[in-house]
Each structure stands twice: as structure tokens, then as C-alpha cells.
Image 1 (spheres, rainbow, N blue to C red):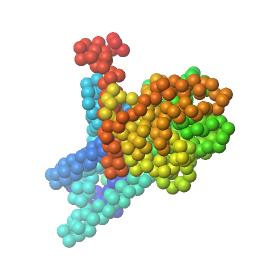
Image 2 (image 1 turned 90 degrees about the horizontal axis):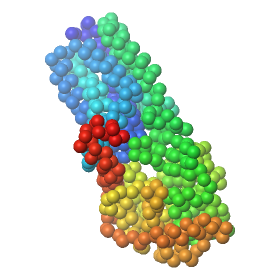
Image 3 (image 1 turned 135 degrees about the vertical axis):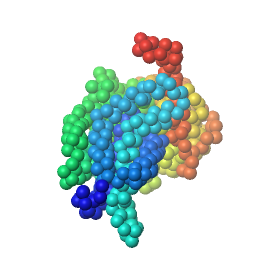
Length: 535
């Protein structure tokens, strides 16, 4: 079919427009894909690698197959039908994507013993995102076929098409991140860029006075997806959420229960922060971490300075304000939305100064020194590597006052002793020397204490909390009994080499296998029927 039968293709600007918006849609889908997967698999470097790799494979296959197909049959109707199909598929992702991801994960968690996260995320990407991206990969070779009429200008035309794609991709990178996802959410972001692709196809077929059936079906399906695609949450199995939303950095949900309030940024693997509703001590990790100001000689009547890196919902700051009211507590939290939730749902004290900043960047730019520095950013594969290295902990030590103490909350446990916990403890011990740990019975956290030549046991016994805090006295006695001297094993992480994702993934594999060992045994012996009876 030549261009004379499709007059719109004689206008190269429409070909360039198609290339521009196709490139934009590719990047927008990639970024939205990361947000769709994050609640289930996190947004770690591992997951990003899987997303980028899957999309590049799909685009490469689309380039290859699309070029060969357009040589065999240069009918432009085929390309614009593909755009319609890609548009409808992308629009359907908010409707069915999360159910597919949960179904795939549920099946694989019973059958896979190692690298569960990698396999589940990769299969989910293939099933949910590969096909529409493959179709978008056919756009460039097809448009080259339609645009080039003379070898004298083929270079400039191909260059212009490439530039249009690249500029579209640039806009498709910034627009979802800074505008659509924080403002209207992931589901509507999919729908916006799906609608753009749909419009490209509809305009083409309306001008050609063809493809009426394909246009009608695509439009009806798009409208249906627009209606149903934003009707429920990522955590569709949980109907009692007090809050669900997205920020620039995270998918977030808050659950309010009779005895606790929970913040989660990763609904498949557990919770990020818990605040017990009872007053006083709760036996949670932030109570045991109060040993740090006790070791540093902080009291309820003398001025002192406490810094919390990874302030989150402010649970540790709240306890510090309660038991050490004369202390000035400064929190650093990169996600401003989490800070807002801390005040709204978690009773974060108004007196606390919360700075919206990356923890390491804050340490680098401040000259202040502190009696206690709490670092709380260490959970499975979402650990920021820049806050896990020898260089970072050296900066922390430089910002401690004489006799100051650093406490690190490791928000994870694992049957494996040579995983991410050990690597972090080894790195801390490399910088501070004598290092001590306490395993928290409730929640499975581990608190790590170190400082400038402190003896943690004698510090706990020689320094007393405020005299009226008898419950804190009692807890510190239990904490000193549970305090263990850490023996380094030599796995020191640096800015050059900090494999936090790989080590965290091993921890996740071990934890999942331990938690599901019984159900996996039932599944192997009795299949799905036996599993359903057990559940």
C-alpha cells in the first residue's frame, strides 16, 4: 500500500509525532512499571535491572521482527493497529496487573527455593509488560520504511526519527516521575500514556476512513479500563486501610488496628514501621534502641542532641522525647509524605525537627555533632547502599560528640548468619571497633551499638535514665543481659563495593523458605488440594 492511499503519511510531521509519542510511552510505562512492582518486590536495583532488561529485550525483538515484517508487507494499517493493541494492553495493566503479579508470586513462592524475588519479578514483567513494549518496538523500523523515499535523504530522516524518539523518551522520563505519578497515581499514569497511543491510532484511521471496527473495539475497551482500572488498591486483599497513596519515592499504606498503627511500603513482605497504641515502653525495637542515649549519658534534665537518620514515622523520636525531654531530637527523612503521615497517624512529636533530606547527604553537609545518632534505613533489599558503607559510618563517627553512641536498627532477621546483617555489623565494627548487638524479641529486629571507645555493658550500668522512668530502668537491665559483643567476620562494604541487594536477596530467600517450609512440604506431597485443605 503506497502513501497515496493514506494521505496522512505524506505529512512527515505525523510520522515524527508517532515516533515522539511512542518513545514517550516506552519510558512512561517503564517508570510506571517500577511503581506497580514496588509494593510487591520493592524498588531496589535488582528490580530496576529486571524491568530495564525485560523492556530492552521486548524492544529489541520488536525492532527485529518489525523490520522484517514491514519489508514483507509495508501496509501502514498494520502498524497503527499495533498501536491500538498496545494502547489497550497498557490501559488494562491497572485492571489486571496486580492480580497477575500476586498470582504469579503465589505460585512461584511454593515452587522456587532460591532467587524467588528475581524469578517472580522477571516472570511478572514478561507477562504484564513485554508484549505492549514489543509492539512499540516495531514502530521505528516501520516509520523508516514509510518516511524514506530517497537514499539522498535517508540519513537525515532516520536521524530526525531517532531524535523525535529520544526527546519523547526524555519527556516520558520526567513527566511520570515529577507530575503524573505523585499527582494522580500509577493507574492513571498508565491510562494517560495509553490514551496518547490510542489517539495516534484513531487519528490515523479516521483520516484513512478505515479500521472502524478496530477503532470501536479499542475505544470501548479503553473506556472500560478507565472505569475499572482505578477502582481498587494495590493491596486489594486488604479493605481496611486508613491511607493508601504514592509519593515521589514510595507506595505507602497505613493500617490502624486496635492496638497498633502500621506503615507499609512493601505490602508483600511485611511492614516498615509499627507504633503501639499503649503509652510507655512497648518491647518494640525503638525501646531497645533507647539504650543508646543511656550509654551516651543522656538524661531527662540535661541538654543533649539526638539525630535520627531515616526518621520514618518518628517512633524512635517519640520515645526519645518521652524519656529524655531535655534532648533536642532532629529527624532526617527523604520522603516528605512519610513525614506528613508521621504527624497524621503516628503521633510524631511536634517538637521534633524533621529535615527532608537523604541521610548521608545530610551528614555530609552539617557541622553539628550529636550525643546519639540513630540510623534506621536497613531492611532486606531496600537498603540504600550509600548508608551501608565504611565511608558512611566514618562520617557518622566524625559527627559524634566525645562519648557519643551510634545505634543501627536492622529491620530483618534471617536463618542465615552470613547475610546482610553480618555485612553491616562487620562494616560498623571496622569503623568503631567494639560493637554490640541486641536481638529484639518482638518484631525480629536487631539493634547494633557502637561508639567512640565505649564499653556498652559498663555504660548501661553506670548511666541511669531519668529517675522517674522505672520502666526504662527495667528494660535496660534486660537489655544489658541480652547485649552481646559482636565478633567481626570481615565482610566490609565500601562505596566501591556494597552488594546490599544481593545479600538482602539471600536473606529474603532464607526467610521465605523458613516461613513456608511446612506449606511447601504439603504442596509437594498433596498438591493444590492438600494445600487448600491446610490453609
